[in-house]
Length: 450
Length: 67
Image (cartoon, rainbow over all chains, first blue to last red; front, top):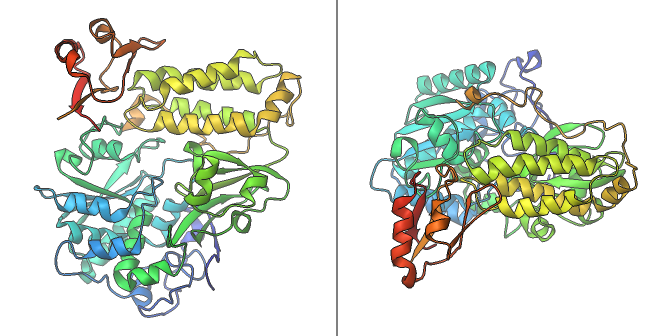
């Protein structure tokens, strides 16, 4: 298998089907062929990988023996963060390694995005790669204080604790790993919200500066990496930058996990190279638009998406980005405005309510978008949305207002014909069958921030 | 070093005092929250800027190194 190959993966349903005996991963000892995929996921089936099969496939984590040595390797590999921001990984490590106080290292598995499954899948299926990456990152910045931040899912946490205990017994780990609960909120995984939560406060974003890498958990410099990023670190440390770059594009190297939502309702996690044509990932027949980057991302018309690859180089031209790899193919039968309005309401409720512009603006934007989604809407609604969008952007402690307006603005542009439809009292989908996934228990109370 | 005015929006509760003390750089949005001019603050306004920062009832207005 070469460049661009995708390996479909069922979304995680921590249930009886996951309790198969582990150990069916192929016995390849520590030499992954450079162009082969998947790298992070097992080659066959969604069977969780135990420590024995992990070590027989990849070998032991290759500790470097001193802080700092991994950093130039990651720089040469060109790895960027897989949590959504695509920030160069080595730069965060450098910043934290230079700090005068002992840093803290956190693996971020708080996947708050309702349309994303990839971190939950990876934590369930390949926890040892993540834990290897956590140990290697800790060594690279000279840290002994290491933790995983994951959702309050008893089965997942139990499995992770077992994996950590298994590693301790086998002497694989250098630093002990603690597990912290992430509340089920969209913003729980935002770096400063994570730092607040692990410091014992509610998981709400904080004003920057200081950045988390300067002063994070309990005021100490804190390295936060998405769990998929850590898994890539574990493999780059073993096989090197050239191996990593055998997949992907020169500007955006490597593979990434994506959560794909097909127009027929199928939902899969796949691992694919950056630069894969979107039409190879999503079946675009019978669709009108593709959502890239999740609910802080942007809609792209199908005709444009069909010519693009999974890369920021392509997607940024359309105002979108790769983000954490959420891709949704919206069927032609759905109302893009009504779908966006439903999600915008959810996003407004997920505001932490700390920042005036976000607290005031997002509910108004969501309500006005509801108006645009209704028959013969007030023509002022669209101009109101544009004005409020301008008022909230860049004025939050985090990027929640900016991400929300990016998503809403793109809908106003991409679904402009549907808005005209609504003005004439028509809608492509008067029945309004919901398509975009939202948590069933959305709209929680304030106590759920911790 | 050049300084820039920033509002910590998690502290600001929209008293609006800053916009009264420093209308040259701060206006209020339709909900009463300050919109602060980006970029380095001009020298000529130094005294007024400092006053606005120290008088903010929520201590939300900050003078930070310009980005």
